[in-house]
Image 1 (tube, rainbow, N blue to C red):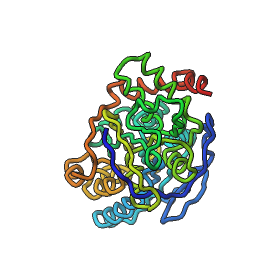
Image 2: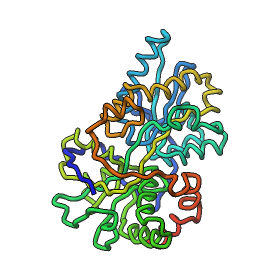
Image 3: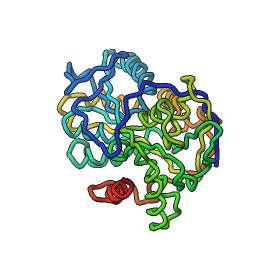
Image 4: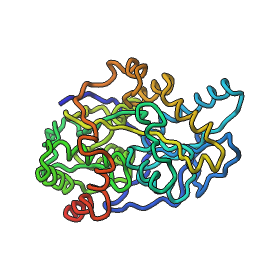
Length: 351
């Protein structure tokens, strides 16, 4: 068990998703030069404009990365380009792209969501080989936020198996982070399937509300003061230092899952828009020392040699395992989250 103190947490609350609700958004929130707009379909000015669709907790990092990319692209090519962005729960964002949100680049919370786009013919087969590190741009892991003084004495995964512990985690139907949480809980059982099923069923009986994404889950725990413990990304805890409202330690169970955040060009859309050159340049920029440094500064673990050197000493050591331990995301998604699969069974029993 590793723990470290976080000094702050404060961000706009987007509201709370009631347990079991997984509504598909009919509009995407586009953020450009600090202004949020609700649009059903972004207007495409020309081939010098792309749309990045990503998951909620990456916004702070991309708000800094995008202007630097635009300046770098201008310096190298002489072209003035524009990168719009849309943020939300990874599952919701994936459905929005499938339903017609014309993303040029997707930075989703897990490879399983990119595979869904691949299955719909939006992303070409073999997208993982198009970029370095199997198209993974960030790493993270799962942490446990606890209340001041840790009154429920929560130190490890096993401490969540307690009817007196009110757990907060996002909804796996809408949130990629919630699926990582689920996988981490399952893997903590050490490979015993029945033990894992019993354990995770008990934990989710202790979950009263299921926010739609990782950011709402944090707001639910911190601002709404609900729950005894919050499962969320490590980067959410680190980002919390910067905003001034949360000073309690978080717990990092070990062993823990290595969260891998992918990036992919949406081939069907860039071919339609004529934006492949720009989209691929943006995706490659995310591996530069400049971008990896910003990811680290916003709580993500780096994936490049230069990024890891910069991050040295900034993250607690933790023993991690990869999703391949459970068969990879194609297997996990089908086994746990397809219609009528384990999550639906557990949800029915826990409610």
